[in-house]
Image 1 (cartoon, rainbow, N blue to C red):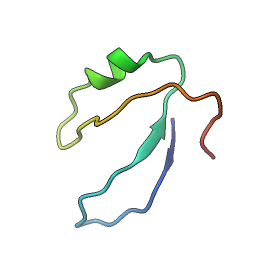
Image 2 (cartoon, rainbow, N blue to C red):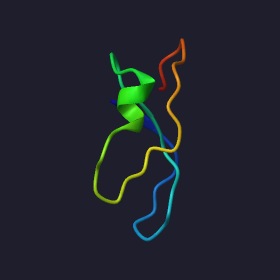
Image 3 (tube, rainbow, N blue to C red):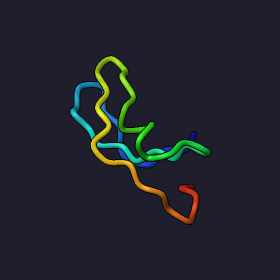
Length: 48
């Protein structure tokens, strides 16, 4: 898993994440407490 973005303990933040071998529909269906998946897309390059 890779990620990009700024972090703050009290902030509401948007975070880009990369996850290998997971299709967009499965990513959108994730149910994790206090986390919402807003958009899931395939991209040809990895995040650094």
